[in-house]
Length: 140
Image (cartoon, rainbow, N blue to C red; front, side):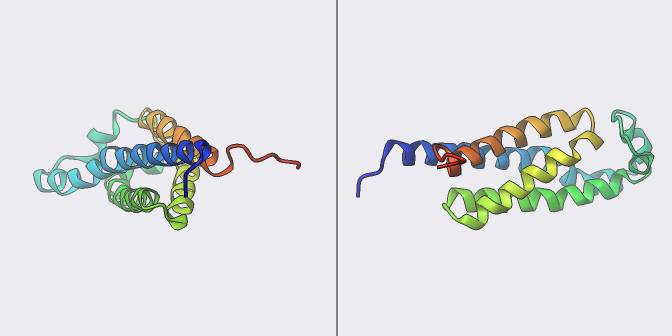
């Protein structure tokens, strides 16, 4: 069976969304998680690290190491979703969509890194929606 131009376009959009999610999961969320044991071993005070961020909620300033641990969970979920997308699985699409939406909601709490999070997740979400609903009309 020959693939249509729309199917090829959708495949490319999903591949690019997966790549964006993979980069975001590994670099923006995975690296802080991997740095956590090193920082704890060296004994770096989390208040020093929190100084570079503009947290909306003061609670985050006092619990930066816990946030770094949670970033490992986000990284794992984002990487798993990316793998699902690359394998053309609907669960990967749904998981990646949820990851993007959650990130867009939470990005305001992690400035300035939240800006990059928002850009990567926003572009990936648009690509996912275009791949799934590209030419579909709202009202037939």
